[in-house]
Length: 315
Image 1 (tube, rainbow, N blue to C red):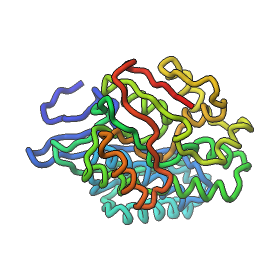
Image 2 (image 1 turned 135 degrees about the vertical axis):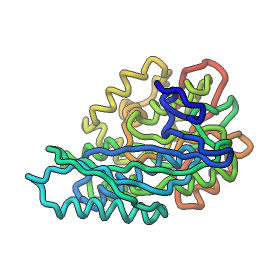
Image 3 (image 1 turned 135 degrees about the horizontal axis):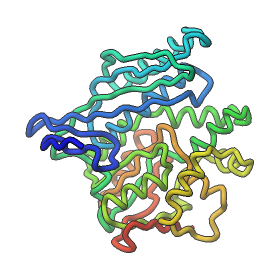
Image 4 (image 1 turned 90 degrees about the vertical axis):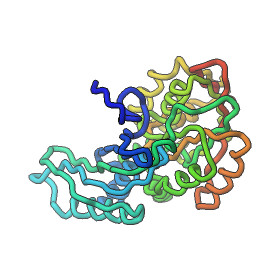
């Protein structure tokens, strides 16, 4: 590992993006993310992939400025019009975020993949990491859970049109407004919820902050169809991997349903922000987030001093 005094956030932590100091007033925020299609519509897939990549910068409290396309495309088996639609979707989402596309790179691959490499900026003293949560903080989750389960139902041709519409709205929504609000109001810690699931990213927060966490399951927002599809066994493989990896750190109320437990460990695509904020600021921040259109945002728990490294999930 290369040591550099200007590398403020790097490989030593499990944060959402890297941060490199350029001056006392300016630092770069850098991230990259790409994946295979999770919906059938190419344009929508492009939007989701772009929103997902931009989210890492928002989670750090940064402002994304430029992006580069990352493309793997099967030129021998898929029509190039599919790629055009994917890139159009990504570009439209970048325009919404006021991010400039500056280029990219593509390779021929047997499996389609798309995403972005994103560069943003931030003040070196205003970085929000996953390591700052403090006992007494309240936890705000800005988007509902369940996208992985519903995406599995989509692949199985089981998801209803209503479920497809809901999950698409969640995954294409930028985390920009919540990020800007938390910078103005002031928070202690933040991470975005993606592949490790809600519990997995919450565990990273408590480990980095050397604290514990209590969650109230009845306050955690999730897409209602996710519970229905989980009952049908339409659960992605990543859910069980997340559960196996983190279950020893979790104390679950015995009355919780198996479906809700699956939702807590469900790998998310372009999920919401999990924000740890002082109690006296939590209701103000939640109110402002909801006014920006994130009506399902909720206070889902609190940070505690003991037991460190453990999450208790209450009914």
